[in-house]
Amino acid sequence: MPVKKKRASTTRQPTSVVTGGAGFLGSHLVDLLLARGHKVIAIDNFITGSVDNIAHLGGNPNFKFIQQDVTEFIFLDGPVNFVWHFASPASPIDYLEIPIQTLKVGSLGTHKALGLAKNKGARFLIASTSEIYGDPLVHPQTEEYWGNVNTIGPRGCYDEAKRFGEAMTMAYHREHGVETRIVRIFNTYGPRMRLNDGRVVPAFVSQALKNQSLTVFGKGNQTRSFCYVSDLVEGIYRLMNSSSVDPVNIGNPHEMTVLEFAREIIRATGSRSRIVFKPLPQDDPKQRRPDITRAKTRLHWEPKVPLKEGLKKTIEYFRGKV
Ligand code: UDP
Image 1 (cartoon, rainbow, N blue to C red):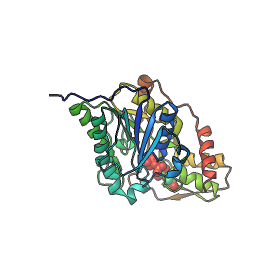
Image 2: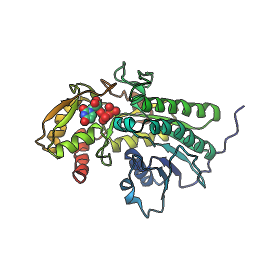
Image 3: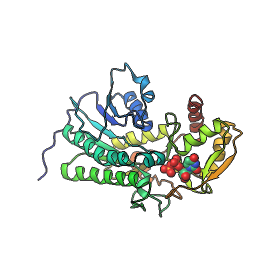
Image 4: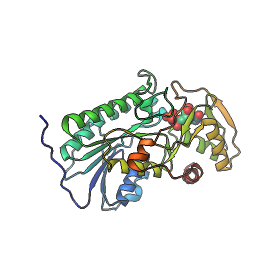
């Protein structure tokens, strides 16, 4: 028999909890929520997040920060209307270095964040990923595709944790009636990415700014599609406010090869860098592009920021860091 749910009282000012709120995406989401009138409680343990990403919010009466590992029980006083679960390492280099913490935050962390949402009668959104499609055999990737993941490969810890997180989210929805949303995030870039996180955007931009060779893995004919962070958080905000329990891909369908991307970065930075080829990491997906039909029809969302414009802002940010 379904249990009667406690719903958070409808306050004039909604309260959001963002796990991973000091991370790249989490901190941009926090900024957007504050701009849309939310009170925001950000939680982060700074394993991959950084205090620099939220330093500008010091003294903001609508912002509160809690330093905590979200795999531990999350205790909060007062009402919560929305839980946005963004805590996770998100770079292949991180998964290699901290695979167990990656697995724990995607599984135990998702469980704790769902428990918080259930307890508060809040709506819950999980930051899932295009990685749940693995090395995809369907292109572009639609939400109906079940994926092609190597459970025991180096990316398995991230991919399987996120797959578990989606399953757990649906279980809380079905068994406990929690209102849930699942966003599958494709490659995203912008200011506040960690300079040394190993992902292609910080890697290429910092190499180009230092006139060092850009390290293209494999032949560089694998493809990715890059979404600027402001587009991404707008899509995610719309998803939370929609009625779509089904997963929704959010990303930019503008697909290019990694080699083309390297050349674009050299152009955009005006660098003298050359390109060198390094071995392709194991299980590196050969192609990736979101089918965003569902986001377009259900959320009336599509990305607006062209690559040139997004790169300009990203390069400006990294100039100050290298
Ligand atoms: N890549 C590369 N050189 C680098 C870093 C990454 O060629 O220095 C490639 C990587 O092999 C992958 C793509 O860029 O094909 C995107 O890698 P990233 O780590 O950003 O994320 P992924 O999409 O693989 O999760």
